[in-house]
Length: 169
Image (cartoon, rainbow, N blue to C red):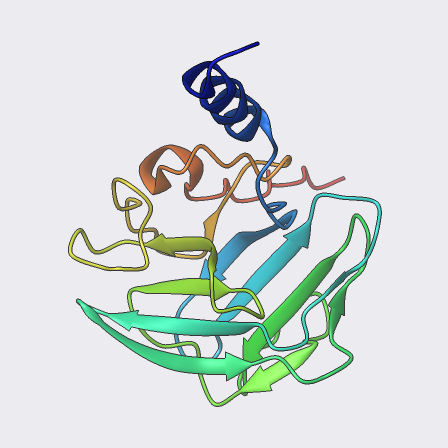
């Protein structure tokens, strides 16, 4: 008959191997602060991700303030994106949710349970950042085409290259 200690060891091993709650496949893909700013979320899965109850917090130095709470029925389509934008936004895609501006030195995405999903910041003291702060850009901060997330903003975010000039005929 196995001892109680042996039984507890087996339970501990099985519990450690059990998967935890699923991490949502949504990432902050691009960010530009200001009245014409925007925050683009990208869904890395094929299924839609419903944003009911999710929110975005804006970081100003070490302070946090709620920027937006997603309305019921909001979703990031499978393989698609969702754009939260300031009122002066004039991007190439329509905004899915308008706010007065996208302020601060970083943004933090929280799920419906208010658990951290993703964050990005350019200020080292920011609670929005993941590991090292991203280097500031003259334009938007952006992840690579795959929205790679290593949990280090300095590695994950960069300044997108401007499109190459087309030769004149």
